[in-house]
Length: 180
Image (cartoon, rainbow, N blue to C red):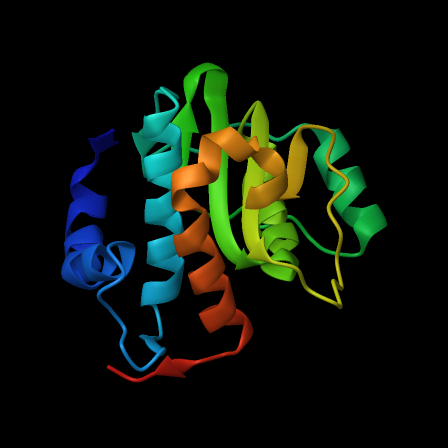
C-alpha cells in the first residue's frame, strides 16, 4: 500500500476510530460519527486487497484524459451527465493496467460514482456495502462493474473481515450515526 500526501492527513483523522472498530472495541453504543463509516469500509477493502496480494496505490492522483464519445452517449442514454470538470481524479485504489476501485456504502451512490470516474480509466470497479431499493441512475458503461463487496470477492478472500463488514452494514443500514 502506498499513500499519497493528500490521503495521509485524511486517513489519520479517523485512524484511532477505525482501528478500534476493526478490533471490535468501538462503538459500544452502536453508532458511528458521520464520515467515519465510509473510511472504515475503505480500510476493510484495503485490508482485503493487501491480504490477497493485490498490489494497489491508495488515492493516487490522475490527471484528466480525453474522453471517448461513447461515454457521452452512454451517459445521455442514462439521463445523467458525465462529471468532467476536475483538475485531477483521485480514486480510492489504483491497480495495475489503470484499473480503479472506488468504495461506497450504498449501491445508489456506487452508480453515481461511475459518472465521475468511468471515463478516466481502463476499467472501474465500484464496490458497495448496502443494497439500495431505489437506484435512480444505473451505470451502463462498458468498462465498469458496480458490485457488492460480498459478490466481488470470494468467501475465502473476505472470511476474516466478514464480521466487521456485517457489523458496519448493520450500523449503516440502521442509519445509526452520531455527531462527533
